[in-house]
Length: 218
Image (cartoon, rainbow, N blue to C red; front, side, top):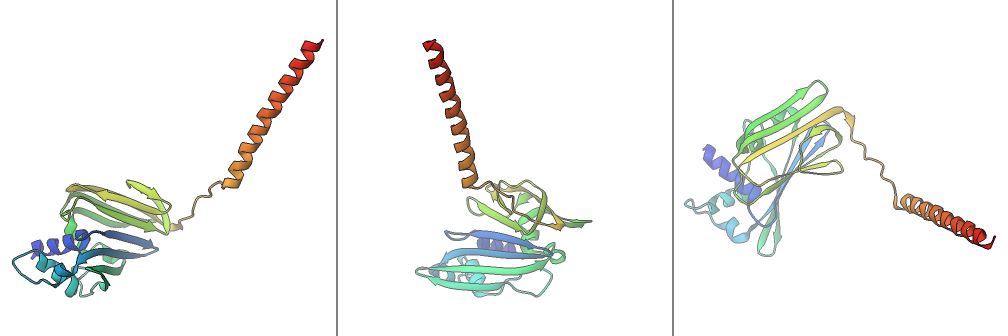
């Protein structure tokens, strides 16, 4: 049964041309969304002898986001020519997220904790759901991130790329402090500074040339 669950989750995450795993931290709610694409042929075949039957199960049967509860993913399927675009979404509380089916099945070590004023997510060790070249995991937080080891950061989105069978993900969030976007200097301000520097340089050059001319005439 565990092997079957692993295959279900692996194909849910990694099948098709486009796959995204996104987790949004919104105070005490974690909004999970998984999107991807399968071909119509894959979604219709139900042969128990092949992995295609697993794809059939994902598209046509209910999936549980929390392994010890009866809740199911909210699922959306969209016809896209020869393909089907799928979206699975579910909102966890921080207490429920530790029992996430994906977290418990795909990661060897998983620590989801509330420590005083912080939420801590640490995933490490063997990664059991890599059946493609790579998967990008993006976590967006409306709370201040105290520490992380993300491969890439864009504003308040932290991105890890898993491309081998081991992983190390760490994110610590200050649950009492909202995220604030850093103030960036605008183009107009930068342009004014550059113009001021150029003006100073030209004025200095003009003064030096003027002094040199006056000295040669004496």
